Amino acid sequence: MPHSSLAVANEFLDRGHLHARSLTHMQLQKLVYLAHGWNLAILAQPLIEEHVEAWEFGPVVRNLYDALRDYGRRPITRLIRWGDDTPFPSDDGAPAREPIAPEEKRLIDRVWDLYGGFEAFKLSALTHADDSPWSAVYAKGKKNGVIANESIRQYFAHLITRKAA
View (tube, rainbow, N blue to C red):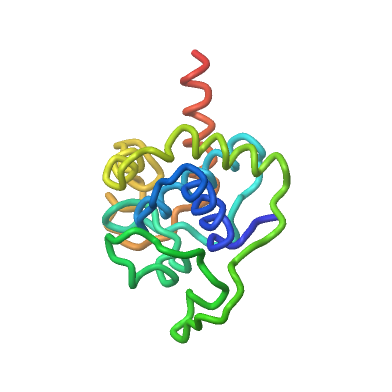
């Protein structure tokens, strides 16, 4: 079952805390996107329930953007709370948490191991490849257009077959 992008982002914030690494808004956007893409390709199901959109600096989940917009380029200093993605966030909201299946946690761990040390603009560059789902939408002038999950799945599945070859 897909999860809120806020809960998945908190999984990465937990890992960052464990490894004494701070994460920025852009890093979280890209890590959530990468985990979603790999989940679609490997486990054949979406990791997040929201749509991914093609924004200037790469794939963006709007709810996650709304929850973190006040940070700008600064490191995220606390877990994301339920309601942070609304116009009326509150400091008394509970952290966004959801039960995540063991295979999804392993996938999130793997994404962290592969990409968790990358700077924001390196992660953004990864998502900007000429043949990426982002470029297929953004290059056609559909700025902030939805990137279809099937397009994301096919792209990440292609990456798997390319690595195997």
